[in-house]
Length: 407
Image (tube, rainbow, N blue to C red; front, side):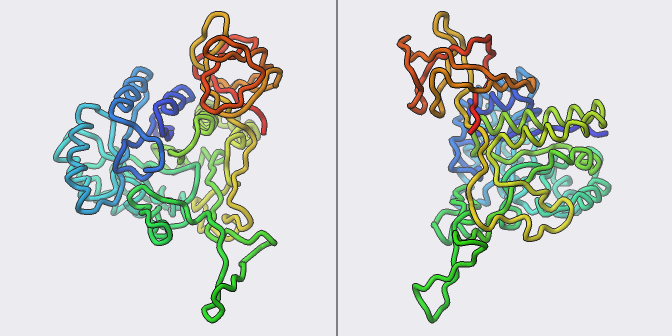
């Protein structure tokens, strides 16, 4: 059995720390340029340095994305960016563009390079091509089945690593290469600026009847004809391991700390349970499904892993998330006489029953005994997003515990 890495996304220093504490073996992040999530908060060089130090102290790796499809004007800036990363020392770069790959090899020749899913990696010949050029790992295209991935594993060097998305949002376009956003909003998805027009509501207009919209619908609300369900493989850990996948990748560099903690913790428990005792893992499938449903999602599918998707993998009547729990905040340091520090994310009130989510897998129902502002004044509720507060929940807490409430 190959080693299995759980690879978790992070869009900020706060979320990186949560990912590490809640079970990641590695975290992937974007800098302030050249990644495919320009809308995320992303990392300054200083935050990147602090995040990498935090992760390395706990035995966790950090990979940095530089996976845009570059235009001419990008190339000199990419070189400057890699000169900065040379001193920061992430564990690997994630790259799609051959020109950016070449620059990385010139500027940081000893840096491990992983080939992004954006490079359309659909066969073992492609894996071997990148291996000969010096790539350590290739991220498989999302359009591959488990049988195809297993065949790739059998036809590449044993030390060549396969990384595969196993959970999160699916893209309507081939390996994420999409022109819709550029065409409809002037923002290029292939350069990190996707506006997600695949989630918009569409109708049909006949050429000779301008202005007369004819909905394509399942019900009176219209349809979302490009809107895919989210990928979830929590019930299929044995098959993923059997296929020879080295890194189980979670999508979500735009997600909250609650999402990251929920997904990281659930997959961590599932992977460890399976490796310890396959029967125990199977006995807990309902628990994993219940836990994974506590983060936001768009209904679940197994994507391409068991063959070509059909109409059941699309959601035609809505583009909204299922949301079972609301993120309230992440526990910080304790202040004597006031309680634990949090940056409040959503409203809650004194007297509410909420839930403490711990990295171990434990969920604890507690009452909010008191809420204080930074000056120690007690207040009845926490209505202001991002307000720094201190809370007394009547129990001892640990830094990075997450508090949430049922929606």
